[in-house]
Image (tube, rainbow, N blue to C red; front, top):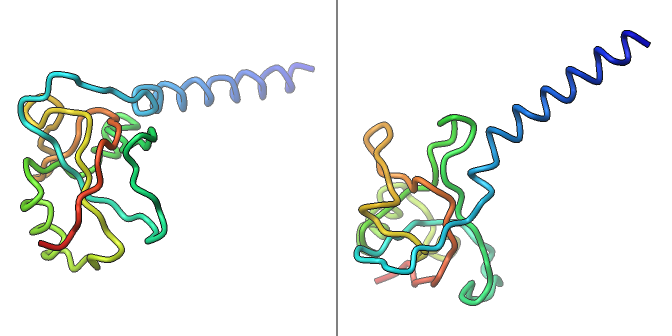
Length: 129
C-alpha cells in the first residue's frame, strides 16, 4: 500500500508540473484595441477552410520558455520574407493575422520575435505577393 501511495504521489506531482507548464499556453488571449497588428506563419493542409470565425489557436510560450512561442512579425511582408529565407513552400504555409498587438504581445528570444501569449487566428493571408 505504501508503494501505491508513493507512486500516486509522484504521478500527482508530475501532473501538477505538467499543468503549470501548459496552463498559460492553453488559455487564448484576444486583444480588442490593436494598434500594431501581429502576424505569424504556419503550416496548414491546403484543404483547411479560412480560419476566420473559428477559434484556431497559435501557442505562446510553454514549459518555462522551452517553447518560446510561434514566430511574430509586424507585417505580412516580413512574414513572406521569412518564408522565402527558410525555404518554406508557399502552398503549404500561410500567413495569419492574430488577436494580439505586435508591440504588446511579442518578445525577442535568441534574436527572433515570438508571440508572448497564446492568440487566436483572425485571418489567413496569401503567402505569395
